[in-house]
Length: 213
Image (cartoon, rainbow, N blue to C red; front, side):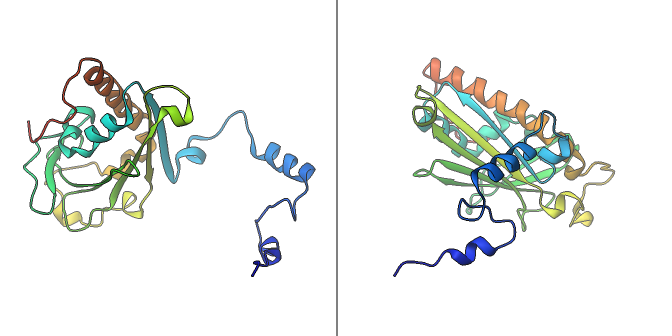
């Protein structure tokens, strides 16, 4: 039985060739395309960055899947503990002084996705989710290497600390205070990742580090 799609064209905000002619679509696209965009318009609710890396996708995935490599390519995550039975590790996020950050890695080798589920101060609710995907560059650029995609979503807790009683004494900064700088900060970290991966691949070095350093 063929689905009746006519009702879809009646939904507010839906534009398909059946209810939006080519000229109207062109006009709409032109209206939405600007030479300059406000920072909050681009990065207000989502922060997505990407980079080409001269390293095979499988090696990049292997590196990212090792949670301990975060102490190499992130700016401020250090002092990692050994993972618990459920894969949780605790580290210090030095950008927050004595702040503890709890992290569990969720990786899918077939899709080459690596998601870091994190939270400041406590490990019961890991609400800071860092979504990463590795794409073979041969598919998208017709060249060796890979593309790393990284997205963060602005969880409501970025705007308010849900566990203020767990904050270390005297801390004045909250991770959400830095959201306006997520693009710049994460781009610096993604550049770190790129340079480290390319160095390890070019010199035949191991892609994992295997534990706290």
